[in-house]
View 1: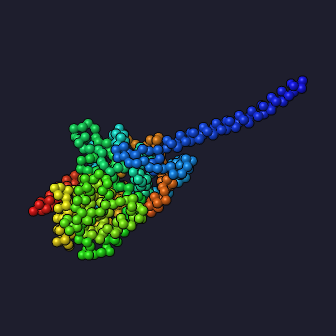
View 2 (view 1 turned 180 degrees about the vertical axis):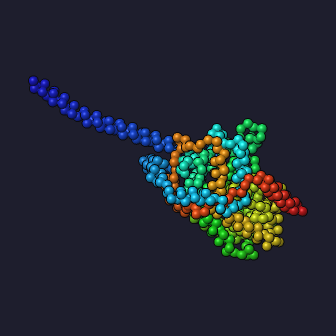
View 3 (view 1 turned 45 degrees about the vertical axis):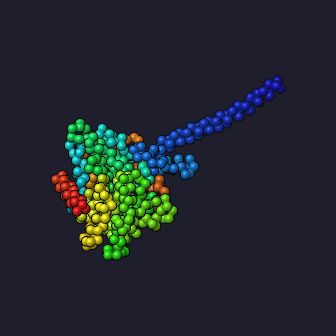
Length: 503
């Protein structure tokens, strides 16, 4: 009997211990499951700064190190910035929308856009008859780093590949500032965007005899042999990695620096400073011209690592305007440096450019820059330009001043106007109703600021737009004859200078 009671008591104690053990085990199991699911969720979330994204395969670069903190910190930031931030800040100011709707109705009362805005029609002409179908758009995805979808004034992004440095972050920020500048006026649109420097959509592959129109792909540049659609580049909102400020601030400083020395006292030679480690035939050849007495040129190698350690004091653009002539040389492909060189007010010596961005269409040889030929002899072509300018100082100074005036004309107001008109005209060509794919994320200003580091955040906040009190400028009508005539005139002037170099 005593044994039986002891066995019973032992059994009861075992059962009483089993329940909490089961509960504890269940809690541990579900906690582990939740952690696993959250971790899986986080590792599948692609972000504007490059989490869980491979570099673009068509222009590879070293992957970014985005795991400086603990795994928990990284996961928390991805969840917070990607999924929670925009939900708190997506309220729309109805009064601003009503005001801009009224502004939109009076859009024809605005000022005229710069004449080179007419190139928007030229860039979109390949789709003027066929329109842009969803199949056509998805063909462009093969060469896109990300997809931008605007619906109802909200911005959604589908990330495919990471972009070098902060290009994605600052490009998306630019789209958000456009929405803020013209709230309620940006149409629903679906855009494929590549962030690297070389155009991809070759005209030779999509001639009149082909059945399908070219895939519509936005990027920062194009060429006469490509269908890529040029869009303002990320550096208009700042280039953090080289300490270049948002455009309006940087231009103001460059112009002020250019006025520190009169034309007569500027050094009478051509100057270039840049990165020569970018597999650029132009820059490789340019190094041969580094002789101020023989060729009238001073060519300097830029070491960005050393410049960063020195606080960028030796690479400050405003301090490089003490030369009468500034050289522009393309890099691996298109180079973002063009607008900064022309801003100096020095005579810009532009070496046989293959690539063009949206603003370079406003450049006219001998009017606001001087064309330099890569072949047959680059150094002799630079020497000819320098000798001509020193023999004709009033004319050379006028070329530099008109180049600077053009850059001043292209303020951020005009940059947003270009973006507005390009997106508006592009949206008219889409034969489908834009809708964000399930893999896209809504992004907003706060979500980008959430991901930005301290210096990026400073640049982004300094480049924040305000709602415009006036309508966008008036876009020139399509006129392909005007553009054809411009190209012919430009080629004729360049040819005449090349002939003069030989005499």
